[in-house]
Length: 255
Image 1 (tube, rainbow, N blue to C red):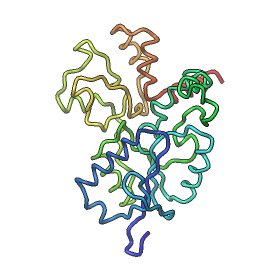
Image 2: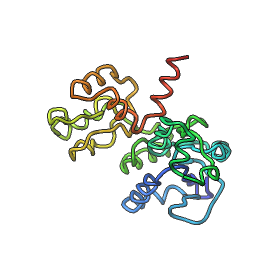
Image 3: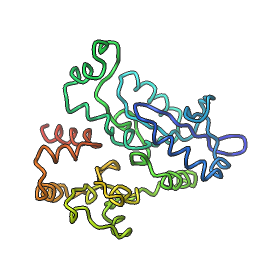
Image 4: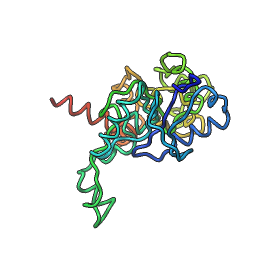
C-alpha cells in the first residue's frame, strides 16, 4: 500500500505478444479514474520506473525458459495476489503448440544455425510454475472484463469470470449459429466473457478463453466430426490455445 492507502500493482511480461498489456493501456485511456485508486509501480509498456514493492501482480505470457522460473518465484514471493493475464499466462496459449513437435526440431526451425544460443523448453502456463490466485482469460483479454476484475480485487472479491459457454453470449446477441452456416466452432465448450466477438463477426471460436469447468467433450467432438472434421482436424482446432491442457490430459490418462 502507498501512504495514501492505494494498492500497488505491477505488470510483468513473459513469452507473449504483449497484446493483453496493450488492452490494459486502452482501458486506462477510457477509464482513467482507475489510476486514482491504484498505484502502478511496474509496467514496461507504459513506464520506465520499476518499483519492487507491489500488492497485486498481473503476469502476461507463458513460461518458456528454465531461467523464467526464478523470476516467477520472486514475483510470487512479493505479491499478495497473482493474476494470470490472458491466454498465454492462463493456458500456455499458442506458445505451447511447440510441445506437439520434438523440441530440438522446433529450436532448429525457429533459430536455424543459432539454435544452441537460445534457451528454451516446453511452454507452460504460469500456474504450472507458481500458485496463481486468479486468471483473466482471452487472446487478448476483454477490456471491460479487466476493469471488472480489478474492481472486484480492490473490494476483496473474486473476479467475476463466467463459467458458462460462449453460446450463451451468442444467443444474447441474437447471432446465427455458425454450425447452421456450414462452419465449426468451439463455443459450446469455451468459457464466455468475450461478448462472443469472433462468432459475431462470422469467425469460429477457437477456445482462447479455455474450456468451461465441465465441458461435454464427447458431444463436441461428435458434432465436429458430423460437420466433416477428421480426427486430425479436431486435434488442430482443440490445440490452438489449449495444447498444454490437452497434452496433460493425455499424460494423465496414460499414467
